[in-house]
Amino acid sequence: MSMELINVAKVFIPFTVAFFLGIFLTPFLTFYLYKYKLWKKEARTAALGGGEATLFYQLHKERETSIPRMGGIIVWVSAAATIILFWFLSNLFPSHITEKLNFLSRNQTWIPLFTLVVASLVGLVDDFLSVFGRGGYIAGGLSLKTRIFIVLLIGGSGAWWFFYKLGISSILIPFWGELSLGFLFIPFFMLVMLALFSGGIIDGIDGLAGGVFAIIFATYGGIAFFLEQIDLAAFCAVVVGGLLAFLWFNIPPARFYMSETGILGLTTTLTVVAFLTGTVVVLPIIAFLLFVAPTSNIIQILSKKLRHGKKIFLIAPIHHHLEALGWPPYKVTMRLWVLSAIFAVIGMTIALIG
Image 1 (cartoon, one colour):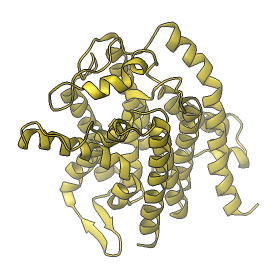
Image 2: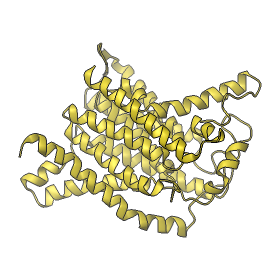
Image 3: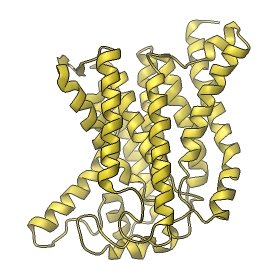
Image 4: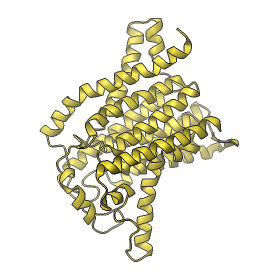
């Protein structure tokens, strides 16, 4: 068998295992989520930036208080379990095949796996606090300042590993070349992770976040494959497998929401993957919607502050604005999936030919 076929198998076999493992685990998870009513007890009533979230409350009050959170567990557990499974098989039953299929490696998958698990566990804590809290924008979860601090802490740890362990201190500018940042690489890494974390507000309509993240990680899996980072490509593939398993049950009407245990893990891990592939400059294109959503929030807040309460959008972020305009949620989701795929292809093209 040629090396190309072996590499393809190394990516697609774990992807398939992660998907079916997620499908298998979901009934057990949903049983407990519904048994213990792990959803918010009150819908959000306060808008980010002040004021009442009246339109949001009208659109989402019933589903926010009847659909469980923590669906993101399916994504990171199925991905992490698949990685560990293939590592375990290569050690318990050493052979040419099992060793080739093992993609847990120090230079490509250790740090993204560590980031995924640690950040997802922090998000899980926030979800539990949110479920048992009451009312408001935070609804009992970790405060925004606390979550920002945690993201920066994770980002700082990742940046330290890149800078001191991997010796990376520059970024690649397409069609130009490498730009050395020196020690500034560390705060730059942390800011990128924080910016991506803010894009987590995309998790607001059935199926939207799952589809968008699946497209983004699939794109980075393709980039890693073309760059011959096969272990990293396989890592992205198992994340996509977990996301598709989640999406199977999150397509309208959603059985559960991804919530912070999914969002925190995925956004921080995506940062690591972007830096490992050296394509962080095109990240705002590939992950276009993860940057547009928080930007629409910022525009809304600034407008209310500077224009005496006047708003640009009916509701921010922008996907809720489209809902408020009368678009059915499924139409918002599918059109933003299409838009996400288009920008992902553009970004991938620039990354590979630049």
